[in-house]
Image (tube, rainbow, N blue to C red):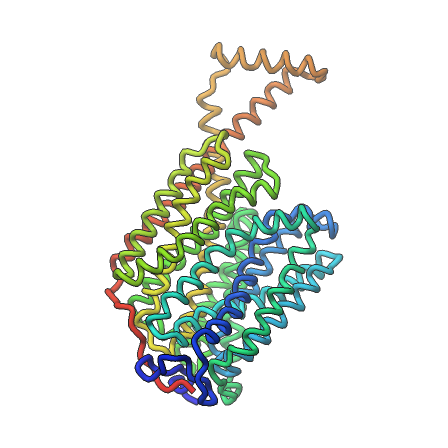
Amino acid sequence: MTDAAASPLPSAQRPAQGFVLPNGETLPWPLVFLGFSGMIIGQFMAILDIQIVAASLSQIQSGIGASADEMSWVQTVYLLAEVVIMPLTAYLTRMWGTRKFFIGACILFIVSSILTGLTTSIESMIFMRAVQGIAGGAMIPVVFATAFTIFPPERRITANVIVGLIVTLAPTVGPTLGGHLTDIASWRWLFFVNVPPGLLALFLVWRYGDFDKGDPTLSKGIDWWGVCLMAIGLLSIQYVLEEGAKDSWFQDDMILWLTVLGVITFGAFIWRQLTYQQPIVSLKPFTDRNFSIGIVMTLVSGMSLYGGTFVLPLFLAQIRQYSAAETGTTMLVSGLTMFLTGPIAGRIVRQFDPRVGMVLGFAIAAYGTGLGHAVTNDWGFWEFAYLQAFRGVGVMIAMIASQQMTVSTIPVHMMKDASALVNLTRNVGGAVGLAMLSTALTQQTARHYNELTSAMSIASAQTQNLMAGLSARMAQLGVADPEGAGYKAVGGMIHREAAILAFGDAFALLAVGLAFAGVLALFASPAKNQPASGGRGH
């Protein structure tokens, strides 16, 4: 079976009443949407699980008796597993068929979610989270590719809006849902919650998702060297991005050597895919100008999407001392805004050149995120609601427009490869964003602390009055060394103020990245929303 033979019918040959199944029957569009909805549910749960544990790590830590360093792996290993499987999804779906592949991944996701919730040790949790990440990462790109291959142009934007909503909404509501689930039930329900929607997704895809047939001959001649090189390269690079900031980057020998290993093996992997007769990951989509530009914008939007859901909860927890539930409630504004903006974003993409949506969306998101540069200790729900509303609207418009533009000129037979690369890039962008923000927060806090202490003269009357007041207060509390405790309190106040200024710098950094993506969008080629060329579907 050729690539063209594995593609759906061109739009002109498709009956208006539905989609032609492999057996020649026509499935009505409402039932097609049911099958696609099952895939959407699976994708939502997979992306949700990246962030659902973010607000409940302390509860999980106490529940299984793990250290803080070990707990960081609960999130890290999920992302590591995702980035390894994502590039392979195009090849595997061509070999097994979309329905069989998705059902297998969905079953694995449900089982691994149950086992993760039942774990009693950090070792077993890390292992099961890795399995869960493989299953979740397998489902995500398949949905994106399906949206652009089974629907005709007039329905494709709607499918794209739905996918865009899931991609942006799931990581945003993850901490919210996780925080409230932990407060209401227990942390184990962060994983058990996947079972009911997982079973629904399984049924819908099994019943209505038979969109193509696999090519078993692809099981012969699999590029195992390419798989190994890709796995080593991606795991090394992703680990460096996830753990580099806390380990002082290249001052740590392991981070340094993993970087060297990642660069060498990933370079060898690219060479292998360009020269091997049956590459495990096709790099042909990069020959398309719009796709290459879109990949960069996907990287930046991934940095903003995951970076925003990292900086804001961290500020609320460290500076405002918010609980998991309070943090989740504050973050909910962004998710609601994105949900309400989805239909508007779809209309903009339908009626205008996608570049208009990208520039407009990135500009609005940059403005909203840039408001955080003025963050103070007094900022709470309403101040962040204003910021999140602008950021949510902008990210939603930019995400849908950039997805449409990225694959608008890609042939149908390359769509699965393009989807895998887009989703991999978004995840890597998130890792890059978190690494940059973690480093920026550490460095900028230290810089602002030095600036504030340098500007604070111990000889000034204001400083002496402050120290006298604090010392007197400490004496009233019965502290053994009131003066020493007063100096310590001043140091804490200065560090807190330096941290607030560093958070402002982090929001500004995100805004600059979004503005850069908006400018980059101007270099894309104009592409009307039209079907990519392809051959007979089944």
